[in-house]
Amino acid sequence: MDLFNNVQAYYAVIGDPISQSMSPDIHNACLQKLHIQATYKAIHVPAEQLGTAVEQMIQTGCLGFNVTIPHKLSIMKYLDEIDPYAEAIGAVNTVLIQNGRMKGFNTDGPGFYQSLILDYQEDLKKANILVLGAGGAARAIVKTFLLNDVHQVSVANRTMEKAIELMKGSNGEVLTPKEAEGQLGEYDIVINTTPIGMFPNPAASPIDTTLLDQKTTLVDIIYNPLTTEFLKLGIRKGCTVQNGVPMFIHQAALAFELWTGEKPDLLLMEQIVKQKLG
Ligand code: ATR
Image 1 (cartoon, rainbow, N blue to C red):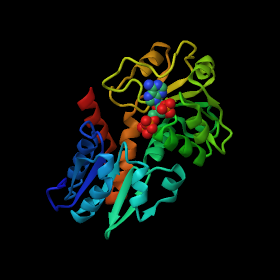
Image 2 (cartoon, rainbow, N blue to C red):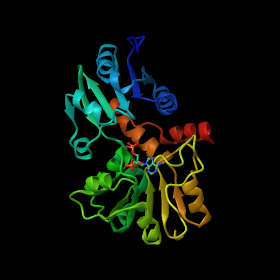
Image 3 (cartoon, helix red, strand yellow):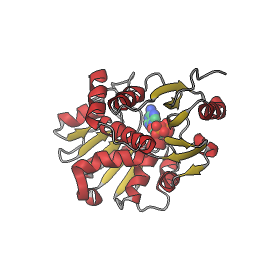
Image 4 (cartoon, rainbow, N blue to C red):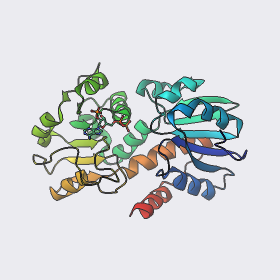
């Protein structure tokens, strides 16, 4: 297998599928802007090739990489060290390579939290929050809330067992999507972490919004399309909405900083995503 054809210093994102990723666009723009002599590329790595890919990356001058679907859990067994925060979340989306050693981090949860705290600040601790979905993204978000003393968090999911597992050890409520729909007006923030509404199936909403109240803020972690059906329904009800762009750029910025020690230009990242999807 020859996935890599140069030995220059580089960063990467690995996943399957990967061609849709906008991480190379935003990272390369920021590397260039800061005159850092490295590139960032997307590498298609199917699940069964993860071990080989990791070995090749170490051998070919990779300085660090992002990990996306389906590798966020499976990458952990290849790492020499895992940051305690990523350990607590139970998933890794960023790997730093130094002297042939790999250390794993999670910037999804903190990236999401940063994107939300900008608007909410201390109010977040008092907010009644509903998370839709109980997959890897929900896990990073819910665990980050709990680690930051945000405890009024409920989870609604199609498969109840997954939601129960996710909320084990916390006081939060676990609901069916139907139950959540019935009390939707009670929440201050509703966050969609499911892929429902994502390109190329943008017409669907993860939840019936009939009982949604104007005071509720809707957050979708999807950024393609920029305004999902879920957010459109919220806008029609007069709700404040936030799409997935802030989370995407904040998780990328945290990874960039871990690798380079430099703060990237968040505004430049945001412009690139919006230009490409706008
Ligand atoms: P990620 O790791 O990106 O969060 P994931 O692990 O596939 O992705 O999780 C996606 C979440 O969206 C899951 O909670 C999934 O529900 P199940 O636990 O029941 O599988 C939810 N999800 C995905 N497609 C769905 C659909 N069509 N209807 C309802 N829930 C869905």
